[in-house]
Each structure stands twice: as C-alpha cells, then as structure tokens.
Amino acid sequence: MTVLREYFSKSKNKKTFYSFSTRRVVGWIGLIFWLLGGLNASFGAPQERKIKFIPVFLPQGQKIIAELAVTPEERQKGLMFREELAAEEGMLFLFEEEGIYSFWMKNMKFPIDIIWLDKDKRIVHIEENVPPCPVEPCPSYSPSRPACYVLELKAGSSQNYSLKIYDQLEFVIPPLKKSF
Image 1: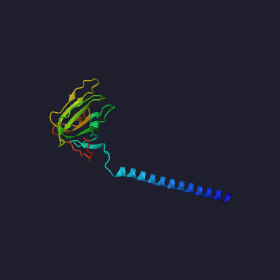
Image 2: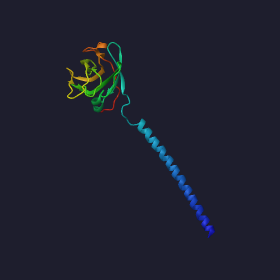
Image 3: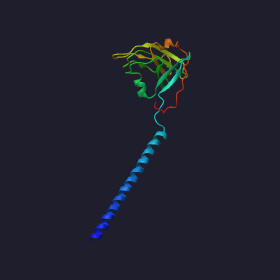
Image 4: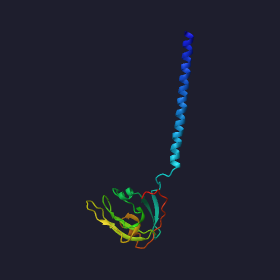
C-alpha cells in the first residue's frame, strides 16, 4: 500500500509540475502574441494622424507654425480656452471644399486675426483684431468669398506681416485620414 501511495504521489507531482510548466509556456506565448498584436496595430493599419503642426510660409518669407484643426470637433473647439498664442504660432482650419465658413469668438481669452484662404491658398478675406466674446450672443465673422482654409493668428499679425487680399501663403497638407 505504501508503494502505491508513493507511486501516485509522485505521478501527481509530475502532473502538477507538467501543468505548471504548460501554463507558464502558454502564458509566455500569449504574452508574445499580445505584444506582436500591439506592434501590428502600431505599424500596420492606418492610425489617427500624427502630424498636428505644419509650417506656413508667408509672402515676405516669414514662417508660422500652425496647429491643424481637421476634424469637426477640432474645428469647433479651435483656440477656445487657451491662455495665449505666440507671435509665430497659429491654427490652420482645413475644410474639404470651399465654402463660406463663419467663425465666432466664444470662450476665447485673447483677440486674434482671422484669415480666410481659397483652395489655391490665396487670401480672400481678413478680419483683424477680432475681440473675445465673454457673453452670448457672440457675433459671427464670415469671409466675403468662399474659402477652403482659415488661419487664426495673434491679433495684429496680419498688419505686422503686411498680409493683404490675394497674397498667397505656402504650406503642405500632410496625408490625413479622412475625417471631414
């Protein structure tokens, strides 16, 4: 009886050891597949755009670093709630097609210049020194002609950079995931 007891105890230990090793191997394999799956998601399928800022070159050779507003949510929020905007910074709103796009200054904390550009990146309208709107109803600002891009700059920038109607700006829009 003692011999049988020893035999079954040893086989149980072997089985337990085997199960423990199998669980460990399966766990490691699972971890490897999980990591590889994460890498595949990072490098394989197209993800959200990574580029959020692009250089915008003005007619006199100056450069503005513009944050892109591409999605409806980004365009709606714009520069709301920001404390300030540096002289060489801006926000560039991208639209899928030309149209009359109105802007307002709700929840803004500082004045800005709003510059509308057509599909050829030529200035079609400028609103200078547009003040923040502390209480509703807030006035809307619209271009006189259809635009495809809108550039918001620190107030006074359009005068400082001598921007005028028909001036052409230069920038390259990176490939973006369609989200219009």
